[in-house]
Amino acid sequence: VLYLPHGYEGQGPEHSSARLERFLQLCAEHNMQVCVPSNPSQMFHMIRRQMLRAMRKPLIVMTPKSLLRHRLASSPFDELLTGHFRTIIPEIDDIDTDNVGRVVFCSGKVFYDLLEARRANHVDDVAIIRIEQLYPFPIHEYSTILDAYPRAKEIVWCQEEPQNQGAWYQIRHRLQESMGQAQQLFYAGRPGAAAPASGIFQLHVQQQQALVEAALGIRPKR
Image (cartoon, rainbow, N blue to C red; front, top):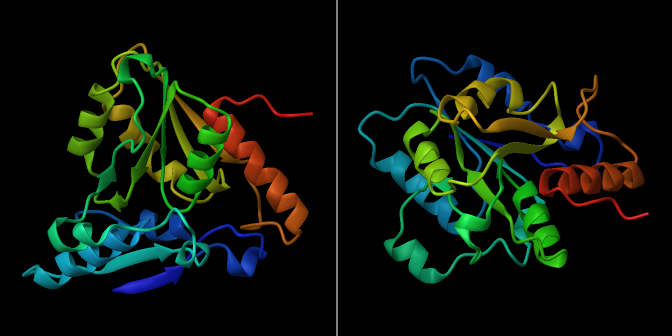
């Protein structure tokens, strides 16, 4: 098991990226696992699953520091006792699936930024889904999620990393596999960049807000 600090928190290029894209580029023939657990129960059951397996293939774990004390990144004790590792976590808020026109998929800490922004802006037609295992990609679970939103025409992949980094280039073909003919796939994240992240905190905040608003379809406030 390899734990790597990965998450955009405004601390500059050396403290933001574990080069997720490089690990995903190496993935083939079920040679390893790449996971991005977003709460304590997921972390626990991921490690438990690894230990119980007869064949333990390398497990790469991307973990942001900011979730250690995030008020939303918590789990009921019952989930540790009775749950299991979920490769995809479905929508957690009570929204009308027939009213959803956009489904946003993401991994890692950006989920909590999206969740807080959606609640603050009272957005009720966008579902937010967490992909906790990027490889092997859970195609069956992903297809089931899409089927739950029959009116969704816009499928969005949201990430904190620049477009040429992170998971986008490695999984977008997977996201398209189960999409209907009337559905379109969109990218919401930082534009392509040579460096992993900005070293200017104010710029980081602006970029983070912009990608969250783009993912949720929120008009920027002037």
